[in-house]
Image (cartoon, rainbow, N blue to C red):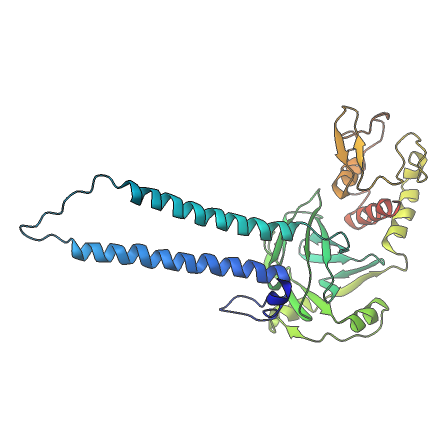
Amino acid sequence: MNSVLSKAYGKAAWGLPLQGSDVAVAWDALYWFLFWLSVFFFVLVVGGMIYFAIAYRKQPGKKTKYIVDHHALEALWTIIPTILLMAIFGWGWAVYKKQVNAPTDAMEIRVIGKQWLWTFQYDDGRTEASKLVVPLGKPIKLVMTSQDVLHSFFIPNFRVKQDVVPGMYTSVWFEPKVAGEHQVFCTEYCGTTHSGMLAKVEVLEPAQYELWKANKPYQVTGVKTPSSDLLAAAQSSARLANAHLPLPEQGAKLVAAKGCTACHSIDGTAKIGPSYKGIFGHEQELLDGSKVVVDENYIRESIMKPQAKVVKGFNPVMPPYTKDMIGEEDMNAIVAYIKSLN
Ligand code: CUA
């Protein structure tokens, strides 16, 4: 199916943005199906209305007879819409499933929204503002959070949009199919400069991506969308941190500096708190007997509200950390570190 769909990549049709990911092609197909279905029923209903208004208009001496019952007709207008609606549901469900389940080999990049800027944190320790750099044709998973208020991360060309919420992680994934520059918008009103909360995605050819990774000059080839001032506004992108340490190693340093290692080991031995080793992605039993899978959100909660979900066999003695003690960048590094201990 992908090879058939891939023909459409990069095209912008009927005022829609260009299709920069395979999920974009899939959503557009559903969109146009709904559109033409609506057109069909509009013509049918309004056309019928006009026809009947004329055919059965008031005429002297003519009385239209009442239709009391017509079981076949009633069955038909129940069954056909049911089939149509179920088909639309099934189709939408299939595309939605594809959109929410990132492949396990997806490259993870962390996104932090703050008034009014997008920050991107890469595994190798770099942090950039307003510029998301990704290789062409590789699945990318964005793990996103906000430092202040609700934002929403939207890449029209990829047809992905996801709320970015303070206090938790949300994620979205895509596979960029078209090299070049793609616009990013904030699409949740977040204050005065909401409309200026822009960024761009640079989808690079593999060779150029390697250059970028090596901190060498590189070129963005391909589309420029939109080619206007919007992108220019996002050109103010800047390298915020060019840490020499990969993200997990930054996390290791933080964990030591914040005193976490006094109670948490990394070799599997239980100290005052559970060990970090091998917990990410695995189930933990809690004090009340319920179970939880250790993911980004669980780790964050266990740092900010340690008493919320205490692992069975341990005492609820950990002091909570606040936003001022551990910022979003640091939190991402700590999560990356714990993840790396698997
Ligand atoms: Cu951030 Cu609107």
